[in-house]
Length: 71
Image 1 (cartoon, helix red, strand yellow):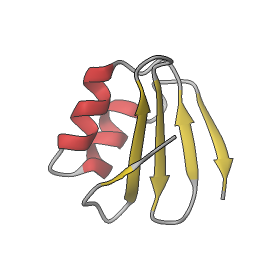
Image 2 (tube, one colour):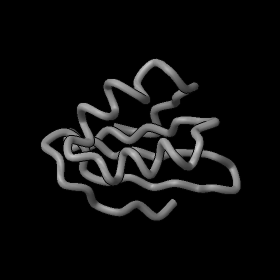
Image 3 (cartoon, rainbow, N blue to C red):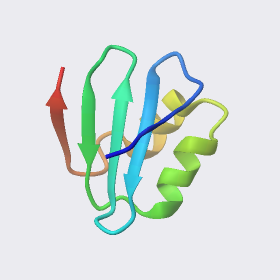
Image 4 (cartoon, rainbow, N blue to C red):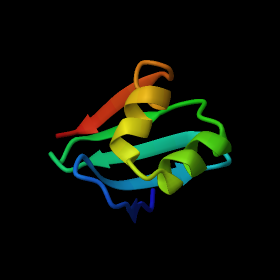
């Protein structure tokens, strides 16, 4: 999945597949996670957030099924 960089001290890049509703997040630590059944509005909110890390914690973390890809 192609990811785009975001300005954040915690999140390096974000990708989204609208066809499968999968959100992929690469953290600055190098960890990459896929979140499933994520609406397009949540992806847009993450990319547009003034603080993507805070948005992730408030809106995404522990709310969608997630799988770590690699670290």
